[in-house]
Length: 296
Image 1 (cartoon, rainbow, N blue to C red):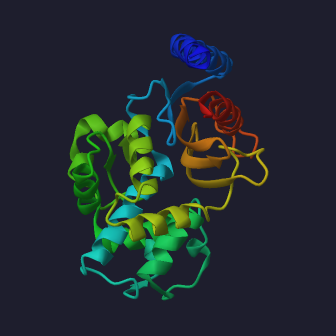
Image 2 (image 1 turned 30 degrees about the vertical axis):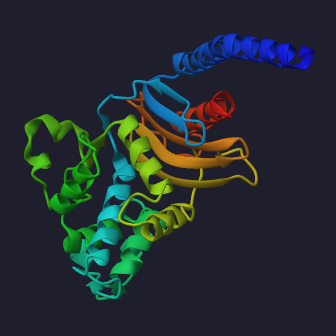
């Protein structure tokens, strides 16, 4: 009987103290995040979630932000969906033409006119190397409006691919003058984490397709932002970069939880195309704070 009373006494203390501890931890996390952001010259919007505990952190999570290349994840989803529906095949051919080459990230702009690739090749290059030309080759097949219809059907109401990289293929959302300032695409940090969570839980198209997309995101090359200082930690990420913007979305697979993160650092005072861009460095610091603060 004595043990029983002690047990229930301990349980009562735990139930009483834990909410207070969680509130204090959330307050500490918020203080640390805001301190980092206050030293940054630009605007920061972010959302993060521990997918194992459900704990979240938001700072401008519903801001409408420029996507840069992070919008290529919705393109990836549409490619897998159309293959699953039998509308296209991974083996379908796409042809590289000089007129279709786009500058910026990727390797196809350096290769020969007339090169024949498969749709699978183009989608892989779009994610692993963030190849802009490969993205447009894929969109020639998939179409921008189809990408938006698919993403809307998944429950994302503020995420839109507005056009192909460099212009052309303007979607219906891209025709809206209110979206002109966003360039390639628009989203919110909360919606990008929502999409990542659905992929991680196997809820996009099928468990097998979701797992394959996550596997491809784990092959992304270049980790200048999220988790750049981490060693031996698996990540599934997609970064984006513009002259005055650095953004990244991804899942960091820590020992204390799968941390899904979407961060946009925009309105930086000047372009700086180095690995030590202030946006990259902030992405790194924020990711470490979020990992610690949201750990189970």
